Image (cartoon, rainbow, N blue to C red):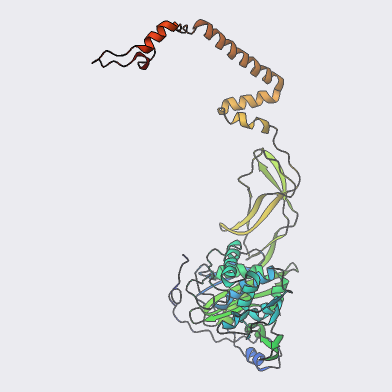
Length: 470
C-alpha cells in the first residue's frame, strides 16, 4: 500500500517577506498580451523561499544545494515530465493515434480533445508540456499502454530505474491524489534524463506553438507556455510548471552556461510549494549555482585505470568523460571499486564492466562512472582444480595446487597407487575375517513335516513357520 500524504505535507515555515531588490533581466519581445504580461513578472534576489527544493549538476547528478530534497511532496503538473519522458523514449513521436472517449472527461487544463480525433504523438507531447493539458496526458497514456493504470505502472517502474525511489505516481497529469507524491531530488533526476533528450528539451523551451484544431474550436490550437520564466529570463530552458491547492506552486527550471573549458554546463533546480517559484528558481540557478560552482573534468573518455584483483592487474577504462561541478577548494578523492562477484578464476571479455570509479568530497559521492575491461583477460590456471580443492582443508588444498602445478603426471600416478592400496587393504581384511557359512537347507520330508505340524489344543504356540528362522 503506497504511503498517503494528507493535505499539504509538513508544517508551513514562517512567512518571510521577499526581498525588494528587483532584477532587471532582459525581456523577450513578443506581440501577444500573454508575453507582455510574462515580461512584467518581477524577479527578486534573495534566499530560496520554497518549502523544499534542490539544485543539481546535470552532468554528474551531484546535489549542489537545497532544503529537504528528499521530502515527499505533491508534484502537481510537474508530473507531466515523466509522462512525456516515456512518450519521447518510446520512439513513436511521429506515429498517429486516435483519441478515445476518456481524455475529454479529464478536468482542468485542456486542449479540448474530442473522441475520434487523430494526432501524432509529438503534438500530444507539445500540448502536455507547453499548455500543460491534462486531457493530452490521458491520450498519451492510452496511446502507449492501452489504459491509464497500465501507463502509471510504467511511470513508477521508470522512476525507480532512474533512482527516484521516493516517488509514487497515481495518474499521468498530476491532479491531486493522496497517493501521488514525489520529492525535489526525484523530480531533478527525472528532469535530468528528460533534458538529455533533444526532442524533449526543444519542446520545453518553446514559448508558443500550434497544433491542428477541430470543428468545434477552429482550424488550430494555440499553445502558450505556462512557464513565465521563459519569457522573463533568456537563460531559462524550461522545464515544467505545476500548481494545485495542495501542492502550491512548483517549478522545474533548467539553465545552461558555457563552462571555463568551453563546454556547455547545465544546472537543474526544482522548487516545491513556493510563494514565488520564478524568483526561487532564478536565485537557485544563478546565485546558488553558477556563481558558486564551476565544472571540472575528473577523467577523460577512454582513460585507463589499474585494477588489481587477487594479485592480478587488469587494465580498465572509462567509456566517457567525467565532469562535475565543484566549488573553489574542493578536491575530490578517487576510489576504484571492483565488482564484488567477480573472481580471478573467471575470464574477462574486452568491454565487460568489471568495476566503477567514484569521487568523494567530504565523504559524499559526487560522481560515479563504470569501468570496463580494456582487453581480454584469461581465467586463472587453477580453475580445473576448483571442485576438488573446495572439498579439502586450506593447507591440503594449497599443497595439492602446488603439486599439481609442478607435476600433473606424478599426481595422477599417486592417486592411482592410492586407489590400488585401498583395494589391497580391503582384500586382506576380507581374508582375515571370513563370513560364517550359510545354514544347510532342510530335507524335503523334514520340511514337509514341520510345515504340517499344528499347535497342541490349548497351546499358545504358533506354527513353526511363523516363528522366524530356525
